[in-house]
Amino acid sequence: MRVTFLIILIFLFMALSFWVSLSGFMFALAAAFLFLVGVITVGYADTSILFYLGAREIRSTDEPAFFKAASQEAYKLSVSLPKLYFYNGTLDRGFVLESRHTQSLVLSKSLLENCSPEELDAICFELLLQVKKGMASKRTKVMFLLGTMSWVTHSFVSLFMRFIPNKEVRQSTDWFLNYLLHPWMNLIFSFTLGEAYFRKLKSFIQDFPIEDEMLGRLGLKLRRPKMIHSLPSRKLIELSSITRNTHFQNILALEFLPHEWDLLFSSEDKLSAPQV
Image (cartoon, rainbow, N blue to C red; front, side, top):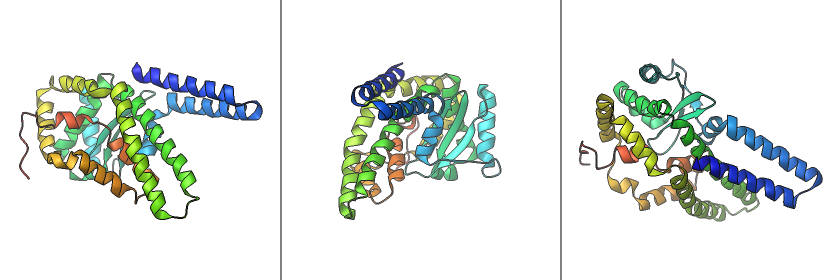
């Protein structure tokens, strides 16, 4: 409800701003733009997120283990068979998207390459459980809102930076933009979704002991020493990203959002992590 209210509030603010500041042809153009954004928000939020991630659809012949895991877990949970995608990112992340009764599973390429069939079963179960419990559509709206915020901001700044020939100035601007943008994205995420979403998901998973144990074992493989996920480490990743393109920085902004695996695979798990 909070994310829907926030989206409606943003649209009302944009509409009021256009009505006050524009007239004639420019107002009609702005109204058409607002209508287009509304259509995308209501009907194509999942497609937009896939665009922000640079995701590519996977065919059954490319990743048969992933397709088998998705179809098996979808049948187990009595949900529709999802579309499958991968993207090139920095962190091991998996996302579930739902819009217009269409579900999609998106995994980072490194995660997809390093997981065994049993681990893919666990991932698909955890992601599709959010569809089963009616949680995935809310998360999709939040990711769409924050992904759009990142994409619009980076695109707008990048447009102006094209007129500055100095490469160092452009890179410094990108880093400063990330420094200002990510805390606000985390704040909006906490307001609209928050840790309560992940704790609720954790309680649902605990009702399935076998799958819960499989996820715990997956956590041992994905978990890293705390210093890798510390604030200084993430800032270093952000700093290194300024040498990449704007699209990569948009992917990083979505990856850095809080994720359920940060909670499920934390040090509070009943299985202890191996020492590195």
